[in-house]
Length: 202
Image 1 (cartoon, rainbow, N blue to C red):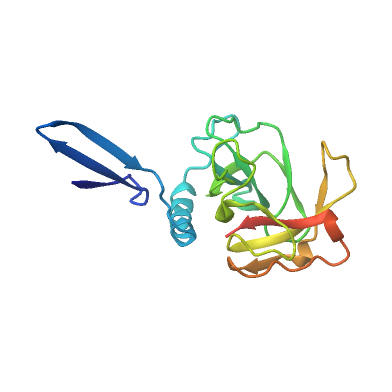
Image 2: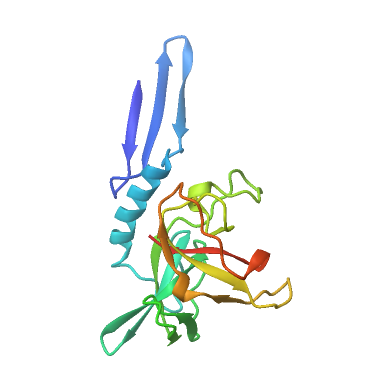
């Protein structure tokens, strides 16, 4: 018998195979492979993002789950969102210090103050434990000229010449593009191998 399990948000599906007869012991196996395809991941992320928008992580609070999070500053009742997203793991504690990040509107103006964090998408996920290779549709960075692994907005990230242990980057906000998974990543003019693309949200 096959049992389908759906969690509280109606998205995570697990299949349990229940096998039993009088001559053998019962066995239960779980398939944790959801989402099975990039399309399923995009659908699940859209639903989960909407759900989590009402549950921001405030300064000093612990993150409840892994993910890519966007900084949100509330100033005089107006929400200002960061352009970039940052990975956090469940149990990490949100900083109580000021956060400086470019604003989502690409104006070149920074958020610079206390922020809350809103879940946006799946964080880069290794293809298997301890691997440096990431599941394509969870990648946050991508080389120019390669195939776009994740639908959404991408901005060029250019190494500003800092050392390799603590690299610093500048972002070409004027070159922000929206791409679909499978499209070619544009070349980044004048940057050579010092630049790649950074995913900044769906």
